[in-house]
Image (cartoon, rainbow, N blue to C red):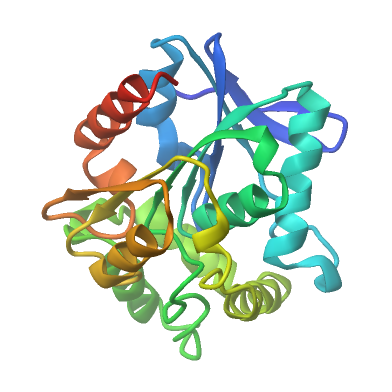
Length: 254
């Protein structure tokens, strides 16, 4: 189901359902449609699901970093008039969610991260030297998933277009550097927000030991595994992902 993009002020976002706001944060190469099943499921469960388009390629180069995106998220929450929200982030989106939670803990009721950067950055922005070779990019997109068939032609085309756009490639590399610079290792033990960690057991981008480290460092976290699953659990195993997240939210009274 396609949701219409709302355009208000300087925000483009999808909004569905009514109730407690869940703000979804997409990754570096992740489209908003990656969260279709999350949007569908939770908007029918008493939540308002919002997916803002993060200004990954539209910020000035100087502001193309994790901290600026976390501030942008804060401004969006203020713009919508929310006191407290639930944040869900995949990959770079998880990192932005974590950084935002560090800066504005009072506005985050709960945090869910999946395949999040913030501790380990090997895959972001690396390996694009042969970016004009479609087959190389296709293989890279397929490696994100346990089942390569999830990387549809549409997904591969989008990644190919991104890395062959000079402006977008420069921004991608700037974000990759920023992700390393904004390593969360020292911050996590001080972050008391309840956090649900959902991870693919076969994630090649942020390997399983990264999830274990997040779970060890975060004082109020729980870790859940999805088998035969790569870096984008909410796409590869949408039903299982939704069930885990829903059960965790219910158990914690969110």
